[in-house]
Image 1 (tube, rainbow, N blue to C red):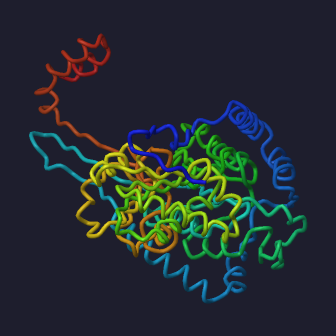
Image 2 (image 1 turned 135 degrees about the horizontal axis):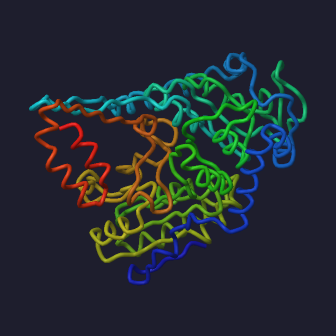
Image 3 (image 1 turned 120 degrees about the horizontal axis):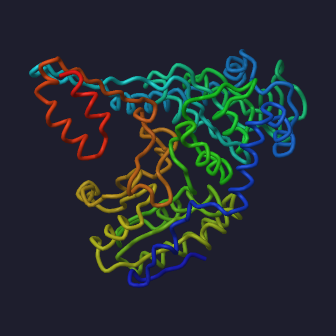
Length: 440
């Protein structure tokens, strides 16, 4: 049952999930990565059979898989994904960056150019749920940025022990190609992905980072995953770029006595069903609302298909904090730095300036966090575990790189030479100084 505490009793560590993995996960992932580096596809096949209980002749989906997925998927759901994709595209097109040239002055030209990353790997989780929304959220910004090749890695179903490269087949009641849910494949087509590989877990991250005979090496890896995937991304960072090391999804709601407890409970549970370690927090200046929400959570929880998962999240990571004022509520929220922040107050735009740390903000009672998970347009790949203090949602900027350039004429270098030579000598770098003095 969810706990209710006063703000004076609040300790940040009681809800912020630590992203540092256990020693066993760290060492296991390190061994997987080393094995993929050493043995490539051979090791990848072994891990796929061991962890995914699946044996495939080829990791890559056939070229016509995307078209087959579209033909076999409910046309109404295709239209829904296309509308969502349009909203995501419209939002992210406003994030496009251009280079610049500063006006030339005294023989000096400075500027910056912007280039897309050439090849990106997008990890899409498998397991007990299907995530076509993650495909859209990761691939569309990459496409807008101009990434030349977008590769998706997603684990096959453990029930797929047959080769179904040529035929649509049913796996645990889900239509799939080669063990991959056709909803994910169709989303890849809509979002503009180029290739799909049936690999998952830390081994997929290692294969994308270092390349194998079958898997091309990428320049950056994005997308969510379990603790092993997150740890693998952390370990390969520096060899490739990554978007973030994501922890469990979380939500924080700020509300007062006028808010609807039924809606608040529903929104908190929408995060708790993600996983047993997903924090859900309500901060309110109304003890009466706190009691009503607690009751509503219990009533709604019993009706959820994933109630066991949500129950553990509520019991272990759910919290209601009663404050003395709305101002104190926002102060606590900024301390917690949530991934998702819902402002369930009248005139919510009046409070937007009080938000300093949050991955994404949802304003008013008709804007549940779920609207942006799938449809609204802003990205749902967000900083978790309090990292919104220093990081941002996935964006077009994550798929570009910037290069500065400098030009000095002979006279311009001469004018600056004494300053630069002195600076180099102060740092004890004589060769730097000589590279200037030899020219002037």
